[in-house]
Amino acid sequence: LLSAALTPYLMSSIKKQVACSPELEKASLELTGKATSDPGQLNKVDVKKLRSYLSKTAPSPSKDCCKASKTFNDLYCLCAPAMINEFSQWVDMNQLTEVALYLERRCPEVLDAGDKFILYMEPNCPERPIFTA
Image 1: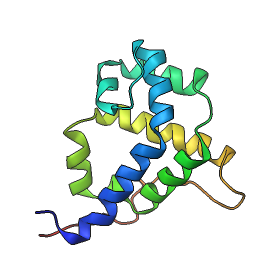
Image 2: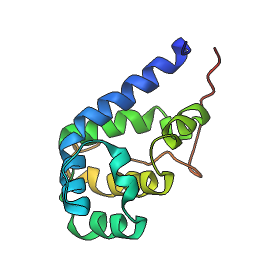
Image 3: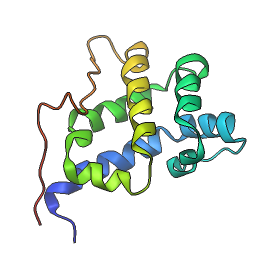
């Protein structure tokens, strides 16, 4: 069983996945020729190719994707060892880093004024939430 303390983090991750599915589908179609919202499918894409797409070709993320990503980020999900361990089971962490940097760079374009997006990921972790069963 999962710790009850972990539940908000997992729910935030799921909401982010759902809200950003259109962006994942566009990226996967562009990079692999097949539209899917499964981030694990992008593991087959070279990190340099992903970085190039995100910096040169990718459209701005949707407001819903950015809001969900900001909530996920502001919970320090990418600073929590348990969450990092979970993500590393199914995504390439270098690719996750590229996507996180893209969101940090592009979300301010679509978020409401005053909604700052400061990426909380190593080495910029004000907290490292620890969960116990």
